[in-house]
Each structure stands twice: as C-alpha cells, then as structure tokens.
Image (cartoon, rainbow, N blue to C red):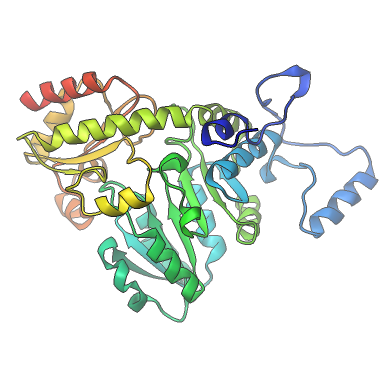
Amino acid sequence: MADRFATRAVHAGEARSHPYGALTVPIVQSSTFLFADSAEVRAFMEAKAAGDRPRDDYGRYGHPTQRAAEAKLAALEGGEQALLFASGMNAITTTLLSLLRCGDHLVLIWDGYHKTREFVLDFLPRFGIEVTARPVETIPSLDGALRPNTRLILAEAPSNPFLRVPDLPALSALARRRGLHLLVDSTFATPVNLRPLEWGAGLVLHSATKYLGGHNDLLAGVVIGSRALLPEVEKARGLLGGVLGPQEAYLLLRGLKTLELRLLRQNATGLEVARFLAGHPRVRRVHYPGLESHPDHALARRIMTGFGGVVSFEFDGDFAATGRFVDQLRLPGIGPTLGGVESIVQQPAAHLSLDPRERAAAGLPDNLVRLALGIESPEDLIADLQQALRA
C-alpha cells in the first residue's frame, strides 16, 4: 500500500474490517471490559508486569476507540507511540510532571501559549522544579543557560501568538549533546507542515482540539514519541485520570482523515491573507513565517512545508480601536481557540486581562490581533478584512 501522508490519515491505525461490517471505527462506549475467567485475569496481570497491555480492562487506562486514534497519530508524526489526553493542557502538564522531579531544571523557549507559561513558571516551582525562560533569539547561546540539573527543553513551533519558529535542528543537537529531553508543541504546524521528531525532538505535543480535530467540536491533547520515553507518561495518565473519552476519540479519528486537505487550504489562505495585511496602511506589522519580513522566514522555509492558517498582526490603533476593528469583522467568530473549519478572531490582550499592566507584563500588545483562518474562500475573508479596516 502507498504510504503517503493522505493515505495514512485515512487508513493508519484502523483494521481492514470492524464489527458488524462497519466502515468506521466503532465508538466503544464502555468503562469496563470483562474477563472470561480468573485465568485470563492472571495472564493479563503477568503481561502487564512484563510491560505489555494485551487488552483493555478499565476505561481510565484506555479503550479501543482511543487506541485506534493513537495509532493513526503515531503514524502521521512518524513516532513509535502516541498517548491521547482529555485536553492539550492535560497532555503537556502530565508529560512535564512525569519527566521532571524535584531539583530538576527546565528551559522554556519564549514565546508561547500563556497557559503553558503559567504552568511552567508558576506551578512547577511549587514542586521544587527550577525554570529558565529564554527568547527564541538566544538559541545559539542556549548552552550557557543549561545547568548540571537541566533535564528538559520545551519549545513551540510555531509559537502562539507571534509564530516564532525555533531552530529545531540546533535545539536537537544541543539536547543530544547534553543528554536532555526536547519537547516541541507543534499544535500550530500539525504533522502536515512540520514533524519535529524528524528534526531530532524526543517528543511532540499537540492540542488536538485545534487542527487535528479540525471542527471546533472536541477537546483533546496528544503526546507522540519513542516507547523509551512514554511509559512514565502513560502511567501518570492512568493515575491522574486524563484519558480521552470514546466520543471525542471518534470525532478526532473523523477529523484526522481530512487533515491534509484542510491544512493545504489553510496554508494557502494564510499566505494570501498575510500578504494582503502586510500591504495595508492600517496594519503596522504582520507576524507570519511565510513572509520574508518575518525574523524566522529562512528557517521556516528550511524545516516547514507550509506556514499554517494563523496570521497575527498589529492594528494601527489602541486597545479600544482594535476591539472595534475586531467587532466589524463579519465572517470570523470572536473566540479563544483556532484550527477549525470556521475562522476565529481574537484580540489576545482582551482575552488575557482588563488590567493594562498585566497585559504589558505578558508581552501582548493591546493592538495585536490573532486571526485563525478556516476553510472559507480567501477572497471572501480578504473582502471582510477590507471592509472592517475601512470602517
């Protein structure tokens, strides 16, 4: 069978036939999986003690619908194993708590999703974990920020909301040389545009709520990598209880089948919209790695195959004027997420805080707009932007 991306998105992780002759993976809506007799229980426990789990027993540890989605995601990222979680934050928090111990040190590459930063900078130190945050420009000199107790480097590629692209080959080489784990949140890229494992990362994370699901109708997260790194994470998932439910796993399977189709459209629309905004007098600056003006454009062209459907830009106005511009848009809904077939717009500073001091401390300009493009006609989206900018 051909093994190109679109074919894997449709067929990977799925059996040739399903119960009752169903074409799609069944939703196995059960919290409990019974054993035929005590001998089967003993055989299961022996296999589990040897590091294997030949079947499901209790839904908090997994279920068949989830495992089909995990196998598909591992195939798409080129990883040995994938673990699904109830949300993207559940995936990243469980992974970090599994791989770090009291006294360890983590290096966070700035910028990134504000809730990830909040967890790393405010929550992890409660457990005696030290954190150093460094901007993406300092990657060439990052060796100097490492300590004897450094265990992990965490980065987003591209980052939220400024779409910075960290030098993954350089980070991977540094991690290998110093014996560290490199975790990359690749939610904005998806495996269509970037596969961090191929550039040497140990683990790749996604908020599957976004592009992987693709329809704004589920919450999910996933971590993908080698089987050597994931047993501790899987054990913690069972203890902390962040497993994905069967309904959400089914919706994710459905969304993944059209991932490449959607992303190719969103890539093309993103570049077209970014070029339009870059040429408009009411826009001060556009943050999009597909533009030559972006500081990471050359690197993005080298390691990415597309630049995604998120375009962040700075409107020519203050906090209130930017809000009025957002209100004038007719096609995108106003909301805090991204990655679906419907376009969504956000003024990140407004969603963060009403206190200007808190917004400034977070590094979010009052006039920043994050436009997450769906699969609508790019001509219609640009016409909508034109009328809002005129208004």
